[in-house]
Image (cartoon, rainbow, N blue to C red; front, side, top):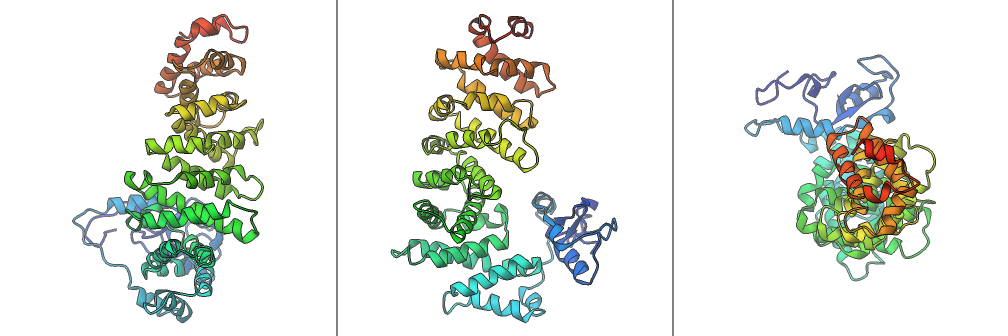
Length: 424
């Protein structure tokens, strides 16, 4: 199959239905990927099975494949002249209701009413075709600009319904960080508006609507921090980190999706050295450990496994600064929780957990922290890492800290001197 520029597309980039390179790939539970528009038309025609495998398939079973989409975009040679996507006007022509909503949102004469934004969000959440048409028509750009401008106004409390409606529509459009990257560059107004929403919602009890708004805001912040450059990340404010940390603390109303988005947003923000200290001071290390304690003693599985990986990655990044190391060491169960997860979750979690233990028990570690490493079994876990089929770099990191404090640990009743000496 050839692209519009004459190059042959790899077979896994080609939709099995349209036989063309996919523009918006989605994956079915069967593992087969299709172009969203093609598979939605297939299902709309009355079919209820996967075209390739024949197994039952519903629209709700489809999952956006952002990784495949990025691969397809990177495959297109720079010299290739890609055929333009179908003009939004021609696509909208097939659905007068959708066309009317898009026209109201995009009207240059006035800002769209909150009800119009909510109606557009409802339509986008129900139809992938409507969602893609809206993005191509510029709805995302329009709504993000409206959101940022509302965040600038002095009467921000009065603007909260509009901010809420904007967030709902942006969330329904389900765009990736790559798609909003150009809209985020040096866009401090967007970050300020998100900060205002999250800080406002952190200041009192939350209704069901407020919980949904906060989740939408955190999910958008995740995409913004992923797409932002270092200059914009350095301008994030401490109150934003405190508000996002509050999402981790709220294990009653915050959904698993909101928790994961909050962890990713903090992890992305910690790409800036300045932010690591601010995130640690906001209590993120403490709350991340508490989040893991909530699932102890069970081993993580499914979505909780991903949460554990994110927690360990965040702690590892925070431990690159003194404030982060102090926060992990100060938590009564901090070292124990990290040690508990070593060799029980995934290779990614192992690498991060070992980095945390090594950072906390480095050359500047207090004698009490060194003794606690032995008491809670962290030393034994590091010895197990040397025996396990782990990454060589992870093993070498573990061996370095074991050698550093072997004199203390060899005399501890909590550590097997034979085991320690055997692998050093």
